[in-house]
Amino acid sequence: MSTGLPIELEQEYQRNKELRTYFKIPANQTKVDAYLPLKFRQTEFETHLGEFENLMPGKEVTTTGITTGKKSLKREAAKAYAPICLAVMSYAVRYGKTDLAANMNFPKSKIFEMEDGAVLSFAQATNTRITND
Image (cartoon, rainbow, N blue to C red; front, side):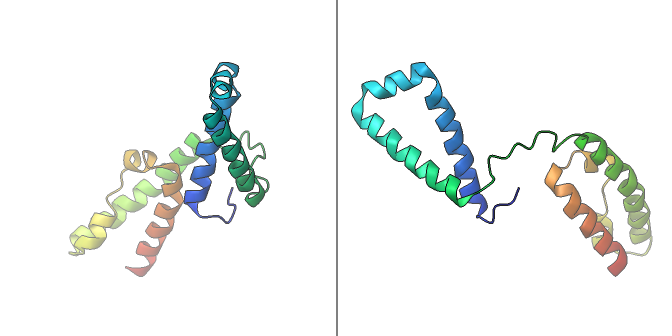
């Protein structure tokens, strides 16, 4: 979910949220309460985290199931694009377009192993290469 904030702030928010979970464990909170300077820092931390939550409305929305079927979708993308990449790479090698050939060297396994966020940009770049070259 995009909040409009820079990725660094969203990542900091996630780290702080994990730290808050750590403090919620009673044994850990007891240790923090025993040392007042640390307890003061925790209070500042909670205030800081509250400011983040105000900047990112809806961040705590449950997104259960958002990645359901992700592997099968990646497999389908790999199955669809691998033959295209192979055909374009063969054409490029035959006609001496080495840059295009290098950019189209994507077998099914390589596409499937891409990070989830990279598949869409790969498909868009592939479509652009095919239509422009």
